Length: 284
Ligand code: HEM
Image (cartoon, rainbow, N blue to C red; front, side, top):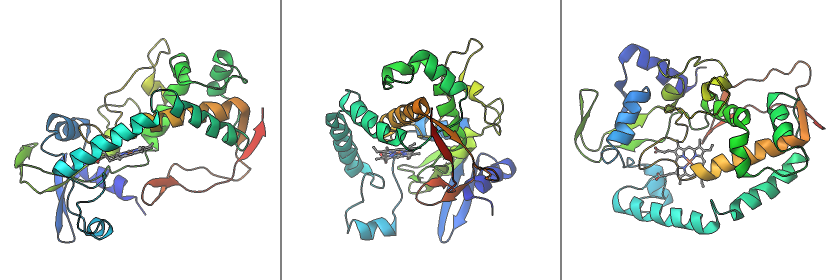
């Protein structure tokens, strides 16, 4: 069965970058491709800042307008400010958070391993196998950084993004979008946009490297979405991905048992997660 995010991305090839689908009694406007998604959530940030009403949330939060993920208007602004300041006082960006992620990563190091490859060669050369990785090492590990970005591009865990709602009457791609319309800025269509990526359907860390092998940021790299409602945990998630992956590959080698086929197809749940599979791990 085709996953919904792939299906809706293919529909854009037929119906264009702004089309609507009736889901039950609700009309949902799908926005596709880097340019149009950016127009909606960055250029028109104020116009699409809200989330639509959701009956499940209404029950869960009994009458209040929902938690940070689903609230709108003043409630959302208050909750977002509070969550941001809580994350900051937790130590994000100050070292305390980095330290606790390093400790967790050390435990994981004892469990997993992968074949020596270019990432391990770079890690060995730059920080060796003894010293724990730090965020300050990232600029010196461009290949590793590019691999992490390419994994997130091809294996994004929130492929369809979260639904937004028009906070005002507006237009998008020449279409009138009335206040209250649900809108889905499809992230798969951005992360696989043929006009943005050299080899959109192939795993290729070179997407994030220049000719000299230096790391380059790409505008269409939006797994955390963008604009006023961009993922609140982006900094924390990036820190975890870097420290865990480097920590694991520093100490362990991974291999796939004979006959096991790995796949980037995920299982749809609250987020897209990989199918479970067995790997061999070996201390290096
Ligand atoms: C690889 C990991 C992650 C990915 C790919 C991801 C992706 C996303 C995406 C696509 C959105 C929707 C943004 C929008 O509406 O435009 C989002 C929202 C959000 N994320 Fe994440 N996320 C990740 C990890 C985290 C973590 C670790 C936290 C917690 C610290 C977090 C907290 C949030 C919150 C609170 C929102 C709602 C923000 C709002 O509505 O104002 N995320 N995330």
